[in-house]
Figure 1 (tube, rainbow, N blue to C red):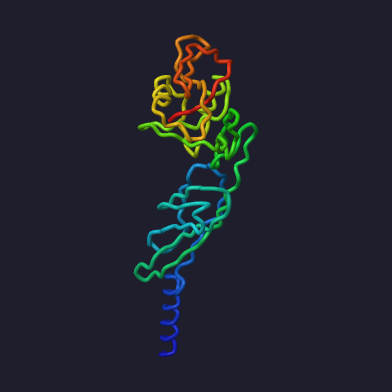
Figure 2 (cartoon, rainbow, N blue to C red; figure 1 turned 30 degrees about the vertical axis):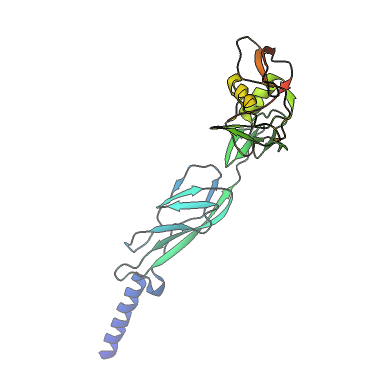
Length: 245
């Protein structure tokens, strides 16, 4: 009789341990591997099947590929990461966890579009001498110095081009690591020439394009050496180029 009682108690204890997962916690199921593509919308995770009522938390082994906030996965770039679902200890239920392999594929774009941070975008058209670097029009470095006047910064003047090209270059290029450039106004270049700050800056001083105009297909120039203004220089003609921001 005593022997049968011990057997029954042992069986009951084994059943309780099995139900609560033993030392390793209850087994978790229905948490399959995942596949996504760069730029996909964030994914809300479905919790694994578990006998434990404890809440789930989630983590990513490689945040460079995917991050997790709450139960939402955000895809960062192509690669792989283990997404782990965990439950803490609760009552008689031991802590437990399981992992799924997330594979994020490269987004393939059709020319002329290019992949930018996982999205297909049309590459900008650069105006020489700027070149496309990482889907950004980057101006080459020059020997001259950027000159500041109050809140304005002027790009060094070193080359001649048409007004049309000069305007496109300023508005689309990253210069000295900065964007938001434009052609200067006549008044801005006139003040710059009169300030006497250009000596020794490595600039080539001469007639320089402005964004100011009172005529169609023509814009004013300011000679940065003398301050002389030419009104209505044809846009197709050549003058020195400076950009300001």
